[in-house]
Image (cartoon, rainbow, N blue to C red; front, side, top):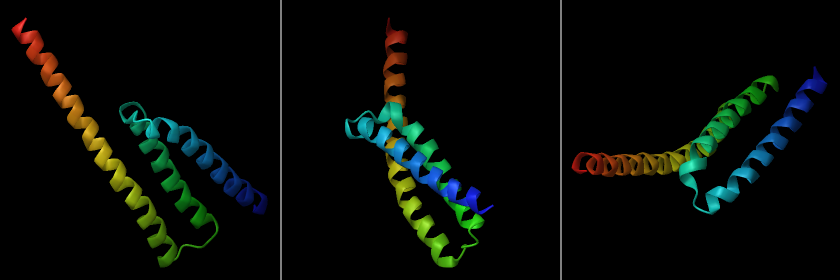
Amino acid sequence: MLKERIKSKKLFVIVNSIVYILLLYPLINGLYNIFNPLFIVCYTISFIWSFKLLKDENKISINNVLGITIVYGLGFYMMWQVFLNIIYNVVIISKHVFNFMVYE
């Protein structure tokens, strides 16, 4: 049981590090439209996994839960702003395509 917990912690750190490093490059270069949904999925999995690790360690306390919620909450808020921007761009592009098709 103890080895499983240690393995789970190490795996959590390794997987999160690899995912965030791989996703930093396109985010820095402004490729939000392609990689932001993938980042949101990975971030959500990381959020759920962090609570699972807290539960496995029996360290669920108000401070830990608030800390994780605040840190991940800020990240979700920033991603939500980018996600709204993507939706806005899709609506504008589809509107132009529709107008082009109607007037041709």
